[in-house]
Length: 97
Image (cartoon, rainbow, N blue to C red; front, side):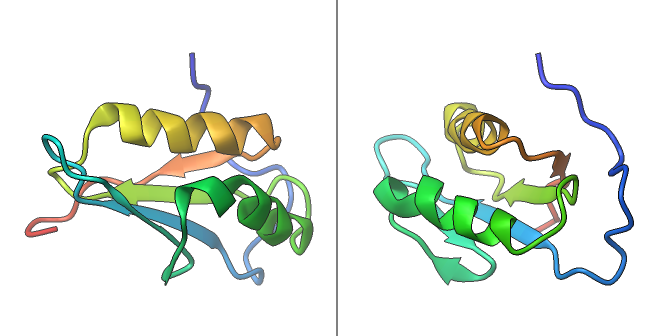
């Protein structure tokens, strides 16, 4: 179960960590972005850990994806972020994305 919560520290003036997933529909490899930069899946945990280390504990990771991504792709990102102790904010899919 994923428990979403508001950050307990003031992250108002801290640049947010943003993860975006695109594509990944039937038999297509999803694309992963960390703060607008494309990231290979095998490097994602280390790169996310580095981003989190530059922010106060408790500042959330924003996660969003395109409408054609598979849920298992989002679950993999969520599991990785949670394993690193990150709080999450799941953003709704925007129209046309």
